[in-house]
Figure 1: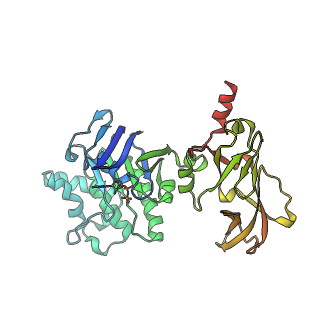
Figure 2: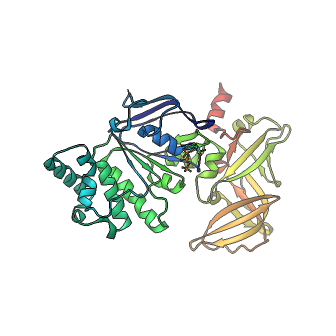
Figure 3: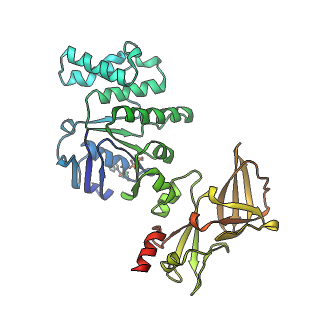
Amino acid sequence: MAGVNLRDVTKKYGRTEAVKGISFDIADGEMLVILGPSGCGKTSTLRMIAGLETVSSGTISFDGRPVTTVPPARRNVAMAFENYGLYEHWTVFDNIAYPLRLRGLADGGIRRKVTAVAEQLQITDVLRARPAGLSGGMRQRIGLARALVRDPSVFLLDEPMSHVDADLRNDLRAEIKRIHLEVGSTMIVVTHDQLDALTMADRILVMDDGRIEQLDTPTVVYDTPATTFVAGFIGEPPMNLVSAERSDGGDTLTLDGGGRFGPPPTLLDAVPTGANVTVGFRPHRVRLEPAAVAAASGDLRLDATVYMVEPLGDRTLVTVRCGDTRMKVDLPGSPGFTVDQPVRLTVDQADVHVFDPAGRRIDPASARRAAAA
Ligand SMILES: Nc1ncnc2c1ncn2[C@@H]1O[C@H](COP(=O)(O)OP(=O)(O)OP(=O)(O)O)[C@@H](O)[C@H]1O
């Protein structure tokens, strides 16, 4: 096992700069999920760590040992792909044994290692079977066993769950997480699916356009997204993001469509008059009332009309329209709103995020410290 360190790593393909100088550290035994939209540079980053792609500039180290120019075979990384590339006409045992045979290990050693990994992943019963008739979850375990049998320092998985249906996806997430717990190796998983990241990661590295947007635990990334990109990418439905402006000398922010938000004074001080900022709040943090009876107080208030109501069984998703802006409200049960009904949204101060004109979250705590200094 090994920790992984990247320093100012870039990747250029001709004129395309796919990775734009990223630095991060992965602890030994950590499960890091690299998350981002198509084309953001996730796979390039993973392939550079594996040594399958050269680094245009910067350095990669394992446990402080530089590996930037070390060929893949000598990095001791294992990479498992989406379809796991199993040989259908071989037994499960032979599939798992394959990398050891390539290394020229003796039969006795191969048997010992395959048996040990099979026990660890609980697939001993199927060692004599062929992969073809086995379930998706079992095939995944076999693919992972074949990677693990080499005792890799780092274990890399590229989109391990694309092209599987939603039911199986839930199972496979739990499987991968369980396997990580059991084997304790450093794992890096690439995905474009925010739920994969939230459910599996020790920490999530969110990328966009070749850069790191945020690297932190799922809880921190969800509760305090560093940028509007992260806020809009994580959460289902994602955070509502509304343009807002601080009017001249005023102590409130005016939202597009006419709503108002009164931020704490320290945060307000960090918003220049006339600056275009973005106000964000999660759909399940909103209180919604018919406009006619609106009584609830809240630091953010917004009058809107109901655009659509979508019952989801135990909860209801209400889309509201305020000027040209649409927002989602996630309510428990069946609250009985109807299309075109006038409503009032209210949100508590603690549940409202403000992002500066560059899209970076203004942290109320550091704004407070700056004000005190
Ligand atoms: N071999 C290549 N030659 C030229 N351009 C490439 C190559 N590989 C990737 N790119 C480009 O680099 C950028 C980042 O690609 P990369 O595959 O790393 O992103 P990604 O986030 O993994 O996307 P996806 O999920 O679609 O694979 C994209 O613009 C892509 O078109």
